[in-house]
Length: 120
Image (cartoon, rainbow, N blue to C red; front, side):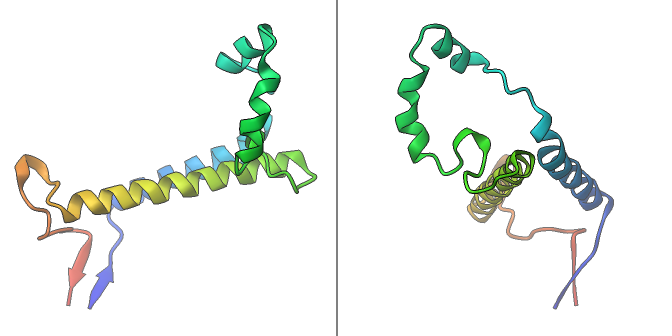
């Protein structure tokens, strides 16, 4: 049986995760609503409305949950959903890489995770 042991390395990632979630959920509602980048160019040249066809296909259009009435909560929840999706994708890719011997210098990582788990 494996037991979970928190190490300094793991604690660092937990703190980073808390800061990331806090930023996305609580600070994103106060981000600027003014368009920037390509959206600003599209607005300046008058073809911004052509993007609505893509917007209808988006799962979270304009970084908001359409059914929620409170905009700040909608944007914050969308930020949290984005973190969960990206964390899941990164976890999946890292699992694939470590299973396929993606260690340094071509060494297999199947011996793995010393210092994180203690086996009993």
